[in-house]
Length: 575
Image (cartoon, rainbow, N blue to C red; front, top):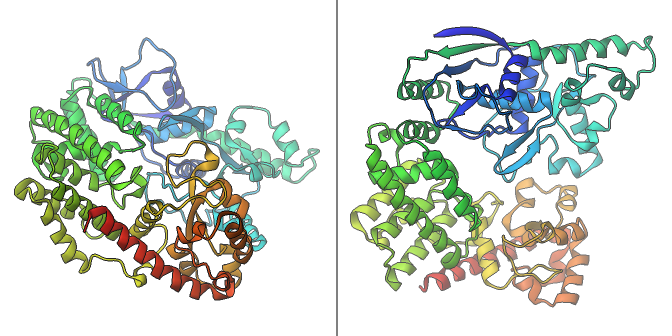
């Protein structure tokens, strides 16, 4: 194996010119902007940041496109990038101001550099928990909490000023000491940057400091990565094994990514099939990650969900499993949407539910009696609300349910593990205390209120996650405003409880803002009638809307919500 030291600038040029290609065994670009921020910080400080692994080959290997468009090159495909895709794509985007394609959308990765950053090592610890974007966590430096008060905003500003790099925001970019990293690399002249920073002449003591820091920033291009190049004589299967071992040891990829790599080395163009099926699911508003499509193949090829058997499973068996998986998953999506009212995957406490539903579809050959449909619906609503696959070993729990489906083929038996796991099946008011939007009960509350005819308080639109136009997207809204409760000293858990949430459109949410509930709820009743509140289980007693009566409000709404949720399950499952 050859080893070379190649500067980042050269690697980025190779990326742009199309001299590097991405083998099909690689996953999509998944880094959040905060990961790019931390990579730049490490490179700026000269910290180690891993190595690069390539394979130079003439073998016709299936490839996929990088997240950044490349130039057409006659030599394309001779060097395949096995390890370092996330870093090189990030650096190509930031250093060249290139757009990155993420989940079908092109967007820039804009990182800002602090000309006034503190000297010495970083003062903030960096913790990275996952590569996957969260729908509840913004991919930037500013949280909703920071907008609540001037004091919080000031604290956030002080925190950001201690950093060397941050994810861009309009507010920071307007400040003189912050400059776009892409802009710095896009120009060799510091004049405009220094003028914006307020430097008017060479005598300014900041002139030399800022100039030196900009020079050090541009020197990131000269940072040399150790590049390992695998021998040409190696087979694609052997290279795949190396890829799996490298990423297993480094814990950089999930087990589903490694399983996909093992499959694609023996099954050319599998990735294109999976992505085409993803697009089909998107047409029904369901986003199914590649990892779960890989797991679905395993489920139907081996009748269990663990990935450890992928390497030893014949490819013909995997292909047959995929055909079964597609039909099963189509049934699962249709069942969720039409029978349950779950319009997209965000209302599932775990995506693992789709595998059990898919297994039922195939075992029953899509022939379910009315009793079986009701039992399956009952199990799904209760298990989803209780977080069946959100506690303990997810794979162990899923395997327990798959064994029931494949072995016993008795849908009614699916409820037995749920009873052992949680004891009781109904919802009690106390279950809602302190439980917020991340609780599995949150989606049940939404489904129950939607089924009872809840509507947006201003537009009168019924609840749906598929409304057209951003103004009509459904959001959750603090009935008693968060900022007012904070001012009264209530704890975060109480403030963000499900029992303080109503479902309205984004436009209505902004119109209400942090108005006193005693004012805006009275206006809603006047314009829409008391039904607007009762359909969302909001107490109609005006005295309970006062911030001072918040705990009494919560107590009454918990009772109403629990009753509505239990009634919804009974009605749906025809109990």
